[in-house]
Amino acid sequence: MENKRKLKRRHLIYYLRVFDQTNSQLVGHLVDITQEGLMLISEQPLNINETYHFRMILPSEILSKVELTFTATVVWSKKDVNPDFFATGFSLGDISTEDVMIIESLIHRYGFND
Picture 1 (tube, one colour):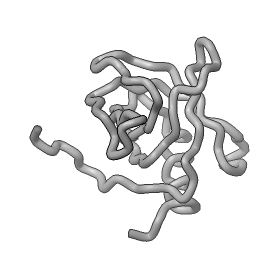
Picture 2 (cartoon, rainbow, N blue to C red):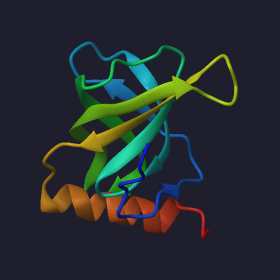
Picture 3 (tube, rainbow, N blue to C red):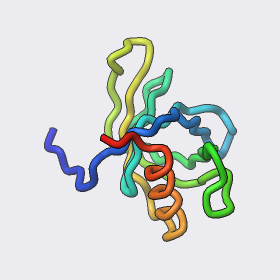
């Protein structure tokens, strides 16, 4: 698989919980994020090309928000290093300038300096 990623993935010091907006069920935990995509670890495999409407609780208020809502489409999904879990890569849908600023702040505040 050719690596088409333009931005370096940024791992966060927290594995933030990501929920499905439609049924409030936990989908997985955020592993890394950029302004273009993210990776989740989940207990269930997710279908490639499926689009999800997510809600992610932020570790602290950022730009007066305590959660981020967004759409993301599954690009790939595979067994994680831990065989009890699945790693899934997503591309983000159209996100607002404010949400990009929240993601950048999240990376700046809670990202590993790698």
